[in-house]
Structures are given as C-alpha cells and as structure tokens.
Length: 206
Length: 226
Image (cartoon, rainbow over all chains, first blue to last red; front, side):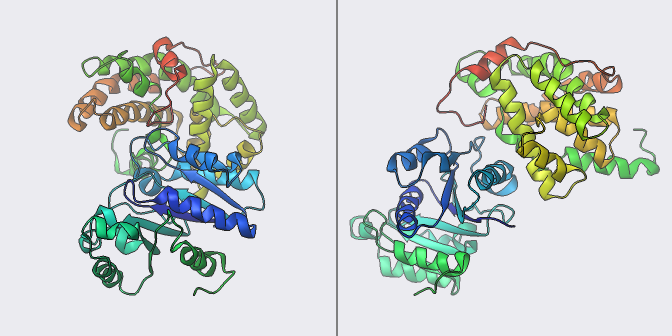
C-alpha cells in the first residue's frame, strides 16, 4: 500500500471513537500533519457532521461512507467503498499523510481488513463493563492498539479500573493498551506518540 | 453450461467472479428499496414483485445492454465512448451517480486484485476519461477475465437480484430462506435475457419509475448508499 497511512478506529457504539478522533485532529492540526477522515456511521452522516462542525479539519477532508446496515462488512469482508473513498482523498490531497477510518459502532467481534488499513485501534470504554477484556473478543485481541476510554467514569459505574486494565493487558499479551479520558484529553498524547512511532515513523514512543 | 469436465475452469471462474463474497461494494446499495420500504411503497408481501420489476424494468432493458456494450467495446476509446452514451441514457442524476459510484467501487477492488484491465480502467475513471457505470465496467472486466457474454449477463442479472434480496434481508423485510426462493423464481427471466444478448448497438432504455423516484427521495438517515 502506498500513499497516506490508513488507520482504522473501531469499537462498540458510544465508546468514544469520534471523541478520540476529535482530540487526535487537534494534535495533528497543531503540528501540521496532513490528515483526512472517513466515517462509517450506521445511519446518517452524524459522525462526519460532528467532525465537520468541530472545525479541526476542512469539511472536504471528511467523507462519510454508508455501511449498508453492516458496519463490520464495510471494514472487513468487503471494504471496497472505504478503499475507494481513501483513494479519492489521496488524489484530492496529494500531501496527505494519514487517513483515519472510523468504523460505525459494532460489537466486540469486529476487526479491520488489512486490505483497508495499515494499523487499527479498538476503543472500548469503562462504562461498557469491566468484563469486555475478559470476553477476549477479536477486536480486543487483534487490534494494534487497544484504547480503554472514559477512565473517569470507573467509580460511578462500579468498575475496578486497575483490575480491568490488568485483564486487558494480560489478554493482549504485551501488545499496547492505553487508558484515556478523551473528554478531558487524558491519554491522547500517548495514542499520538504510538502512532508516530508505529505508523508515521516520526518519533519515539514514550 | 452442459457440465462437462472441460468446462469446469470456466464454471469456476464464473462462480468466483459472481460469488456474493467477491468484494465490490455492492452490498451497500439498495437501489431505492430502503426508501421504498420506509415510505410504504413496497412491503414484505410485495417484495417479490418489487425485485421482479427491478429485473424486468431496470436490469433487462438498461443494465443488460449497457453490459453488452461494455463487453463488446474494443479498446479504451470505444469503451469510453460507450460509457459516455450509457451516462447520457440515465434520465436522472441519482441513478446515474449511484451507477458510477458502484462501478468505481468495483474497479477499486478489482485493481487491488490485479484483475486484467482493472488498473487501467480505474486510472481512466479516476482521471475523468471514463464514466465507470457498473454494468459497463462489469462487461469490460468480465470479458478481460475470460467470460463469454451470456455468462457475463447471467452473473450481472443474478447479482442484481441477489443484491436486492440481500438488502431486504438486512432491512428485516425478508428471511434468508425466502430470499433464495425469490431469487430462484427470477432465474428463468435472467436466463432468457442472458441467452439472447441485446443486439449490437442497442442503447439502454427503461423507466423503473417507482424505484427511480425512491432513489431520488431524500433520506438523511439511510443505511445504504442509495
């Protein structure tokens, strides 16, 4: 695969995928990284519109792809429409370095096709339950980077976050896990640093 | 196909290219069905009529001649000319845009697979030298892959019927078992059209009014591309 690096961002509904992208766009805007985004919302262009309204990226750099009622199909079994959208963005913006492809919210079995992305993140959240890492879904196990979001909610939903994090790390067998609170920006710098090291090859991870 | 052993390579090629698992983005197109179900223009009981009408009024008179022209076109210039004519034959922007988008998706996937001609077609379409209408691209790609015209038409017709039935399944309007019965019922019509290909130069025509209007209806909360 040539051109811009393609990064998938998947995870259950409401886990914070769009919030993470908003924070990432702030960081990339600050250092001048050339980015575009493709969203795969289940219905509507809601995620794409939210990102456009956020103003961190020119609206024409944000495309919405319909998933035909199958959020996992459009990123895994048949990622053709996302590939076509990414190709279109690369042609339109020749200096593009990164294309972020946000999956529609799906279950723990969703994974990204490596025909579509070079690297992918799976975002789960504390409020979704501390049993998610224990269920060892393909999303949690196979992603390149697992993000556990909404750490601030742990005391409010009865989750022992250190135990949840330890379970996730054990399930991942040494592959990276980052805790985040995207609403306040916590953990986002670590995600960016990881992408710089593993995808953009422009920095060393902390 | 008579089923002789010598025909097995051609049969396998057709099965592979026509497989529902062949990635081409088609699963995300409902060709107006989603909107029609939402608006009550069709329902579970009338679904067979809807899909049958799409075959009779869209696929047979429009898509089949468009595919045949794409299959018969000799060289890049002739194919571009034919695709431009097919483009002009669409009476409304929504089906024209959807057909082009579906064709571009097919070119994207087949170019990534390095199927014969796909990369050149994709480049021509991406740079505006070719209108990538789906049936025209199917004709060109499948001929380059080695399919004869009747087989290419059969694949296209069956794919159209299966795509609509599959969309109906995902919209909760049809079960997977019922979908097979419905498709089986359409096979004789598809086979007739494929066995007697449109004459050379026959232009696409047809006016599937209800489904085209469904395609034109605004649907901001839709699940499908169209």
